[in-house]
Length: 340
Ligand code: FA5
Image 1: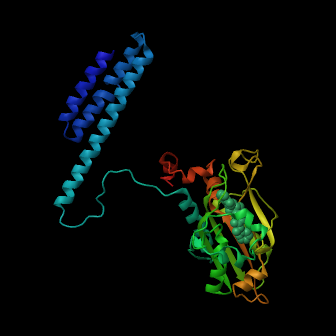
Image 2: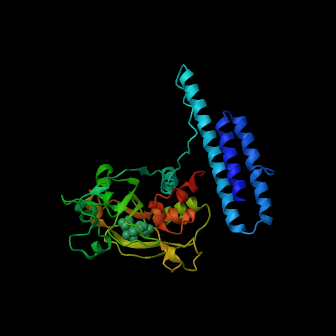
Image 3: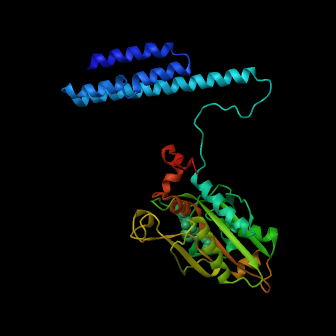
């Protein structure tokens, strides 16, 4: 069997060297890989071979070599054709593309765009904000003075000049209040950083999307309405959520909004730390101290804010079991989003 395979390999390489157009390559493909081709014949011949495992591996190796060599030759041919067209074209032609693998959007980009679009249709402005901020913006302006225990939950990476990598998108609240004043409707997605151990639902670098609405007579019912609308638009169906009290110094009252784990359906799994629920979008009514710090008249205006965990939303939206896949750079998992 080995000699037969080696002989076929040599014959293939010789024929490939002579195949200079698409028709010749196709003929070669049929001759070797077709239903009645050499590889299929070899497979049939396995019946009479004693060491089937070794012979099967040799046949597979040859099959892979033939497939790869033909694919490479086809790509080279296409590129040569396009290069010839480019050389002979009188004008720039944007439709001429080389036959390389195309990239795909990162699932976080897709999830962000989806949520941004939903809030834009509800009249929210989209703001971009810095990743490096100072202590004032990240903590003090949010009613978290130095040595406040709430800081323990958000340890981060500090620069030598005292600035830090923002731990939450709330770090932009103060600047945005000062930029627009009231009334105000804004969302601001961004990358956040925390110095913490990673697991299936925690990363040290992840995305959040902050939202703020400040106007006269804004109440908790406005907050709940916007949260519900956002979730039903993202998931295109009713998803099970629960609202429970939560403490954040910059809101009063504050809530934790959890989503029923879409990976296990609520039974408990590593993605939800076996609780069946995933903390997704804490929210609450903006604390008067925070509004005042942002220059908002608290006699006239109230507002709500939320901090949506975008990376976790993408986990639930696309059924990604481990949050670390998003930063893995693994094309095997990330390129699955190509067609979306
Ligand atoms: C905050 O960051 C608050 N700034 C949110 C907020 C905004 C509350 C406005 C009230 C008003 P928290 O630390 O819980 O809260 O993070 C918010 C969400 O970000 C979490 O529910 C979760 O979905 C996501 N998140 C937090 N830490 C991580 C992490 N390490 N990895 C992935 N996602 C995370």
